[in-house]
Structures are given as C-alpha cells and as structure tokens.
Length: 125
Image 1 (cartoon, helix red, strand yellow):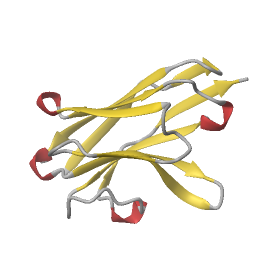
Image 2 (spheres, one colour; image 1 turned 90 degrees about the vertical axis):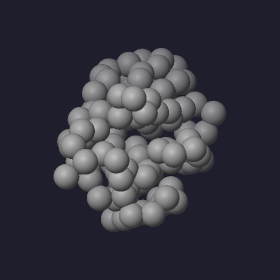
Image 3 (cartoon, rainbow, N blue to C red; image 1 turned 60 degrees about the horizontal axis):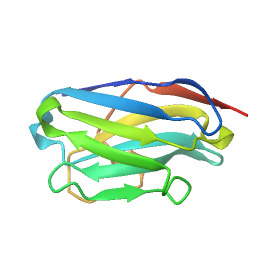
Image 4 (cartoon, rainbow, N blue to C red; image 1 turned 120 degrees about the horizontal axis):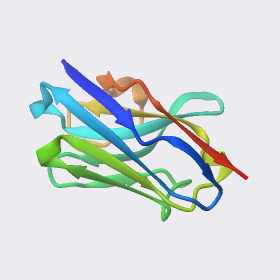
C-alpha cells in the first residue's frame, strides 16, 4: 500500500504562483511514475504532469508547458508541482497519483495505482 498526501493548494490571483506537494509513504520502493491530474471537460481526469522516479524524465500537458514544473525529492519521497503564470482555467482539484507497473508516463488515469485525496487550486481573474 502507498499513501499519498497532497498539500499546497489555495486561492491565488491570475498570474500568480503556487507549489503543490505530494508526499508518499508506505511501500514506495516500487513507485515508478508519479503524476498530477485534474478534472477536465468530458473526461474524468486529465494528466497535468508526470515524472519518472528513476531518471527524472518528465511529461507535461500542452496546456501547462512552460508554466508548470514537476520535480521530485527522492530522499523525501515527495513530488512537487510548481505552477507559475496561473490562469482561471487552471482552477481545479489537483490529484497526485502513483503508477507502479511499468516505467512509462501514461496519461490514462485508470493505469495509476494509488491516488491522493486532492488539493483545491482556485485562480481568480
């Protein structure tokens, strides 16, 4: 079992920044990929960014490229999402997820094994 706890959400004005954190605990040694998702129109959730635990390869959705940065701290078993130049369209609950089977950064949420409870990000115009 892996437990994920997100933090760092809040209310910010457009153009502002937030940093989300996702701390993993439990059986974390098999965590291959960690990612951030948020709900999207017509979808349950869409991937925002992902990172391979080994090697640090990253993936970003087109909508956040150049504005968001995902990073990890192996010693703390924590993944971060630095969000800059926030827009009202970024308003959502952000969920952290872990994929253990396979090392590819898959965009399909069904292929992730564990999820956090979510943290609310609200961007005002």
